[in-house]
Length: 167
Image 1 (spheres, rainbow, N blue to C red):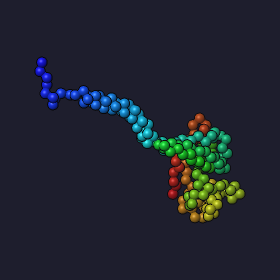
Image 2 (image 1 turned 90 degrees about the vertical axis):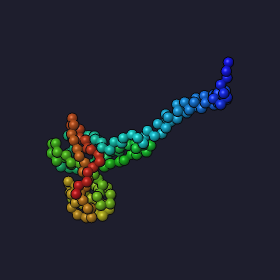
Image 3 (image 1 turned 180 degrees about the vertical axis):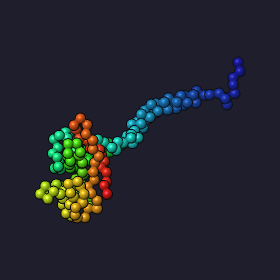
Image 4 (image 1 turned 120 degrees about the vertical axis):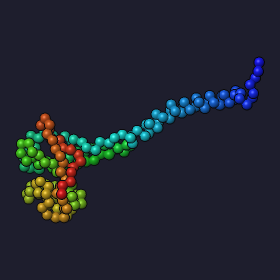
């Protein structure tokens, strides 16, 4: 019986080292890959930027008078959770035509309110005035109020976030 030369022979110690490394690598991969996936996955998710928000039944909104609605939208962006509050004025022009305006002044971001005695939205910051359809009447606002796209489905009014800038 010929024994192979000692240089090509695998010692018991080297064999045990190799098995220990192989088993350790398998265990590390079994634990580590799901952990890495858990940590990284929120950043890899596609974020929803547009959303249709229901405001309520169209028939309950008066014609020709701005109706104020507010809502909060919650979003998750990776690990960050945010809640954004919105305020809008809904102007129903007739039975089916509706326009929805932001309640944020385009000058400094102050919240506008409807003053029925003068038929204007008024910004308290610098006396910016807007007409029924959000157009600038007087004051420093550089452009009209932002407007939301809308749709009506099964009698319910929906608006699309985000609003679009009018010039």
